[in-house]
Length: 168
Image (cartoon, rainbow, N blue to C red; front, side, top):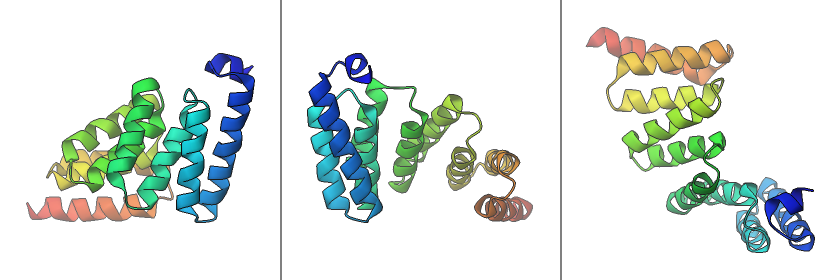
C-alpha cells in the first residue's frame, strides 16, 4: 500500500526501505560514511520517501558537514513542509553556522508543526538570547521547562538569561 502511495513501484520501494534500514543500522553503529552511502542509495531507489533524505541530513550533520545537512533538510521541506523535525534540524544547523534569523524562523516553523516540542523551544530561546532578546529567550526557556519539567539544559539557560537580564 505505501509503495503505491509513494509513486514508486513495489520493488523500488522495498529496495529503498532496505537501504534506509541499513543506513539506520550503520549510523547507530557510528559508521557515518556507510550510513550516508545507504541513505543515498535509498533515495535513488525511491525519492518520494522523506526519511532517507532527513536521515542523510542527520548523518552529514554528525560528520560536521552542516552545508550538506542544510541542503538535505531543505529538500525534505520543499517536498514535505509539514515535517516539523526537518524544520527543527534545519534551524539547528543554521544556528550552528551563525544564521540566527533563519534559525529562529525554522524553530518557529517546527513549533507550529508540533507545539509541544521542548527542544525547539529551548533552541529558539538559545538563538533569541544570542541575538540579545532576553525576554523572548526567557519565555521560550519557560515553555521548554513547562513542557518537560526535567530539562537541565533549559533550566541552566533560563538561570543564565535571568542573570544577564538583571545586569542590563
